Length: 213
Image: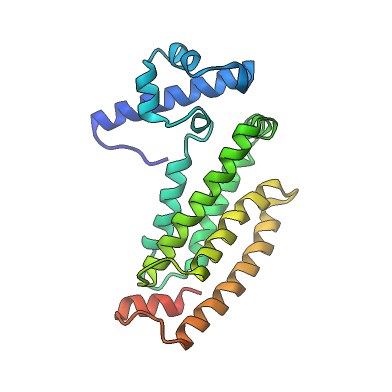
């Protein structure tokens, strides 16, 4: 999670974390459907309006690192060195998320998600949103004016790699297998783009587009 620098930002982050921790504890103790927003706000000692200023919905309380992960994926694309390949940079972020979500402490949370239709639906919509954001970042990195089908497809593959690896008996082996396929797909995509003359004219970006395979 990104660490805020200013005092006000740190205070807001601490309040947000307190609300999320309180909500998760209540959900695990009582069951998701048995706990309301007012219950969480009262237990966290904040106003309901304060809770909603940090979280748009009850479901979002369970996935409190949602926005942070989406930003980290985009940063993996836009913040890497000019000649650093794209797919390995994205794999690092996916590996970090898988490690976090397969830790022993995460098991009760995923049981809660799997047992709760509203949370399963939210998690699916969250993954689709992450994929769209990642596809947009990849397209921008290539200097494209809009997100193309191939950028969106690679982004979907990357996001799905997380879900598949998290559910696998051996997450690391699953990531190895999945990312070999993603690398192959990206090589085909990049080669095709270069053949069509779609590599951006800017020297640095052209170098990145050709080498980021």
